[in-house]
Length: 219
Image (cartoon, rainbow, N blue to C red; front, side, top):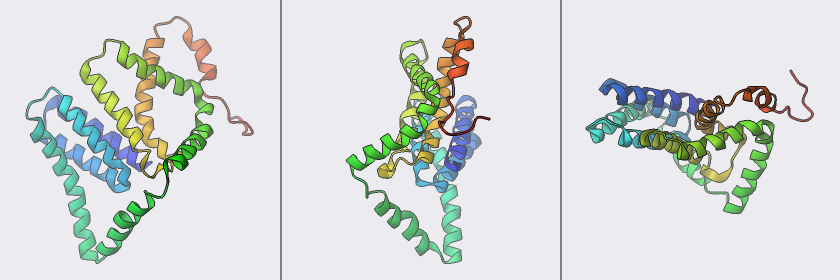
């Protein structure tokens, strides 16, 4: 999913900007996050995640830094708007991206949304149940182990906000969950690091990491 590609690179650039306090890095991060939104409106949640990262970071002038990041986001849409106006397609853009998207995103009720969620997750969660269990364990460890508050805020914001990125419209189509995977992967890493301290654990965890889908041939 191209939203996740640009969002992950944008957050990586942001982490470097927070560490080294460089304006160009903030602009680059904002530009990449703007591209994530350009791929699909759901990418907006990663700008919110970036706001949390900047807020909990050690750097001073946080408002200025986030404004610099937003400048990078604005550059994407400024260039897009200029191209749309020059090509005479701004009206079509507004219809399909704003008006149609608003209508499409409000068709599902909560009951339908829950059914969609259960149906979609039942198609991919059981096939990698151990990995999802590791992710849940990583989330629990994030709260119980001695992680810094900055780490907890960063991973917590990424987890919650990327899941919210799956939710608009309540359709919960399977490929929407790709936005959630970067946060899940980091939580799996947290759990795996803790599990690695247990001697011989890999011998019994590895075979159950991914269970073949019934009816599909193995590799």
